[in-house]
Amino acid sequence: MTKTQAPDGPAGDRLDAVVVGAGFTGLYMLHRLLRSGYSARLLEAGSGVGGTWYHNRYPGARCDIESMDYSYSFDDDLQQEWKWNERYAPQAELMRYLNHVADRYELRPHIALDTTVTSARFDETTTTWAVTTQTGETVTARWCLMATCGNRAKVRRHAERTRRRAQR
Ligand SMILES: Cc1cc2nc3c(=O)[nH]c(=O)nc-3n(C[C@H](O)[C@H](O)[C@H](O)COP(=O)(O)OP(=O)(O)OC[C@H]3O[C@@H](n4cnc5c(N)ncnc54)[C@H](O)[C@@H]3O)c2cc1C
Image (cartoon, rainbow, N blue to C red; front, side):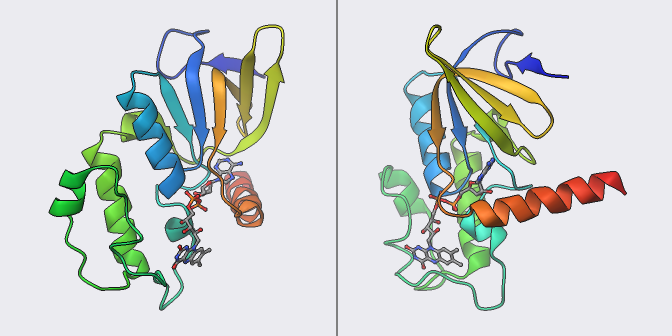
């Protein structure tokens, strides 16, 4: 059954924004929205934040540009306090960094993990997005921001694995 979910307010409330994806892009979008006073919810298919670096854990995975350049520059304090251990950060260090960002800017209460978006429909009459997840829940918002990069095949496989596991 489809129901309307308003995670940050009373049932039926429309959020300002729904962000899809908890990689570098989505975490920053969520932070900017919240910092600017908007209500926002981030939906992420994976079981953790990190995006590319959550999904790709093969031995030797690391960024191919210098860690300093592959990190956020929106906050001087964050840049000063975070010490990169390696010039080209490995996957585990990138994950620590992105988890630190999620904690530091108190993003987690606004993030729903294990939540795959299956459709996003715009109602022109009410100028509202209805974003539906694999559980059949629908979140409504004025804006829908896709921060899903190019990992759709990976997410489909992840969703399929999750569905099969749930059926066992
Ligand atoms: C193996 C690998 C190595 C890379 N190395 C580098 C590098 O060294 N330097 C560089 O500059 N770039 C690199 N990249 C590119 C990298 O993707 C970007 O640098 C950056 O991490 C992209 O961030 P993002 O937030 O835009 O997207 P992502 O990190 O891909 O995050 C997208 C998120 O959206 C989620 N998502 C997708 N569809 C849905 C849905 N329907 N519902 C809910 N959630 C969904 C995914 O689960 C994912 O967590 C690499 C990419 C890969 C795959």
